[in-house]
Image 1 (tube, helix red, strand yellow):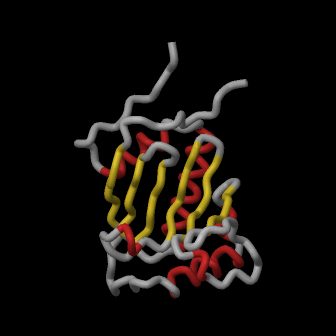
Image 2: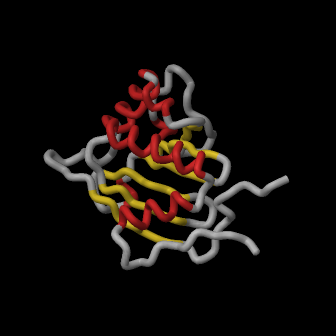
Length: 162
């Protein structure tokens, strides 16, 4: 019988729900994602953090407003790893060529441990994304965690065993 973690009830607090979503990953991925979330919370002004437990990824978007289209970046977590998606990364200056992707808008930065966020080059890239954001962060904003969606059907949150 396959062991699964109970999914958080919609009546749980957003923080408890996010903890439940993270618990569905391997302990190592959950730990790395927690490190990355702490790092992003230090580097990004207090944001509306929008959580999407969708088919492919668990995503936490950081936005100055409650509008998803205003998000600056997001942390996307999947069974084997995670990355920071810069929503308007195609227009960001990237002198150190840290960003991956060739689409018209989004670029990403793969995170192995989450500690990459301590690198001055990565910090500079995040600061640049905030400065170039279409919507500025309002003064005195507070961090708010919001569960935007929970998909009923999803890819496994743990890698398949060989």
